[in-house]
Every structure is written in C-alpha cells, then in structure tokens.
Amino acid sequence: MRVDVRISISAPLAALLVSLTAPSCVIHESRTLSDPTPVIRVNHPVRAWNVVSPAGRVGVVVHFQAPGDEQEGFYSVRNQWSQDLGLIDQLGRAWAYKPHQREAAWIGTGTIADGAARILGQAECELLEIELNQLAAAQD
Image (cartoon, rainbow, N blue to C red; front, side, top):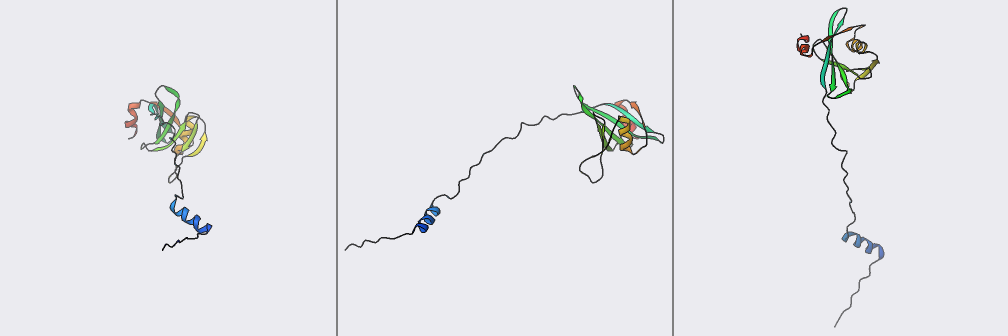
C-alpha cells in the first residue's frame, strides 16, 4: 500500500525558508587608491639674523628655502635658547606657537623684523645678519 503525503506551505513560510537558504546580503567592495604619494620638500637654512632689541640680543631668525625654488620658504623665529617660537611666511604673515595649542596663532603681517618683534614679545627690534655657521654660537 502506498501513502501519498503532501505538505502545504503558506507563502510567508515559503519566503522565510528561501531567505534562510539563499544568501541574504551581497557585499560589494571597491577600493580607490588615494592621490599619488606626496612629494616631500626639504627646506634648508640659507640666511640667518640675530634679533637685537634695545635690551640686547633676544633671538635669531633663520630663513629656510627649498633648493632651486625661491618662491617657497619661511622664516623661523627662535628665542636666545634656540627654541622655535613662531614663523613668518613668504607673504610676511607672522604666526606664533602658543603653549597647549595645536595650531599657530596669526599675530600680524608686515616686515620680517616686525614679525620677529611680535613673536618675541618686543616693541621693536633690529635684524643683524650672521653667517649660518654662527647659529650654534648664537645659542650661547
């Protein structure tokens, strides 16, 4: 004797069974390469000046420039212990490094002497050019 058994499945139950057996999610991943590796430019010191105020020598300014590119460079302003206190860009904008701050603060625009005076906290100063090999001696 033969028994014929048929199972009746409702539509929602059938959809559930199909979704459990088939992949329910398709992941498509695409990778895009970032811009080409940036070019690292190294600026070298080309000139230096002692910063002298009426009270005496208060620091030094060092002009850094990329080799072969006179348009790119900056002036590093250092105190008498050779600590970097700020910089002046090619447009004469002076930026002072402030303690506990990530970014330098813009403190004015003008000549290199004006920027150095502002960064070093002087009312006025004069720049006297020195040789680069005198920078270590200027630290004393």
